[in-house]
Length: 430
Picture 1: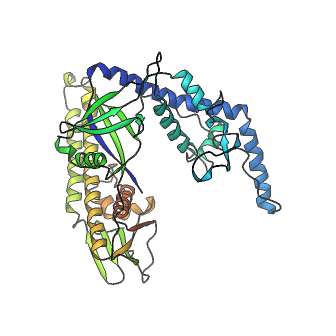
Picture 2: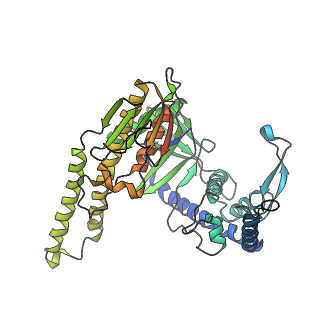
Picture 3: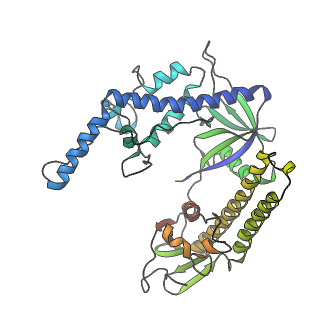
């Protein structure tokens, strides 16, 4: 199931603001330290040279196909050993465990971070380390086809560097949501006293009475009631305010009457925003005629041009000052377009999923255009002057559609090429 996140502003006591900022800096330093430990381990293990020999052997095998295919000599987390599992259904079975993750070793992540960051709660360190470990094998290289971690070991790129305070992770093991006097409170244990080892308990009030927090209020109530499963979350500092990023999982609805063999096809149109089709006969245009998209894009472009023209003819006393305000204006304009396109994608995907449910479609296929195909799509060209970098986020549309389909128990697929004319599916032209 898809894990979703909602961001809620929280009230932080003045006496704890500096402590939380310091903890966010510690999370930043721990991220950098994990990369340093990882690189030192691979350097001592001579991993780069082993990988070069492996790729040479693989090229020879690929040409001759003789013998067994060479195995990887090094894994993303480095060398390790086989240990017997003591948990769950794998109890007694031997599994490979990297040395860096074996907490009893002095050179493990756990031991090093515990010694260098004793004031951080053990659960916070563990969540941050687990999240880092889950990403390292999936990292892509900046250039080329090598895995990202291999590219770093080959010195094709440098280690990632975190220069700003990072979000503070927590989950239900070191945090709790509860209702107190009609308000939802978040209790966390993120720090601990170095002298006695006891953890500090912070209590934050979620600001859910704001107009824009309507959806977050519903989500928070369902997490408290247990209807939604609470997952790993974060505390984040952003422009003078603290926010709680609450991650949750919604239960999948069991729909009756959905036909798994009945497919609804969605693709961006060339003369209108979206085309939706079921089978051979039924076809719809979604998103209206697109005039509101054209108007919204032109409004942002026009206002941006007017502000630029005003600054060009402004006097010297009006220039050189207020740089922060000038930059924030451009940010607001770009955010206006992003907000519009996201609201539009939300509404269209909601209507498409509603149509799929009403028609009994058990499968939805979305044809996401490639970069070379986007120039001819209506949403990419409507109201665009050809110079503005106001693109349409087709990937976001696919993600929202997949999330809504999963909630309704509908299978969702994605393709980058529409079927040819005459095949079952969507026509290439309107």
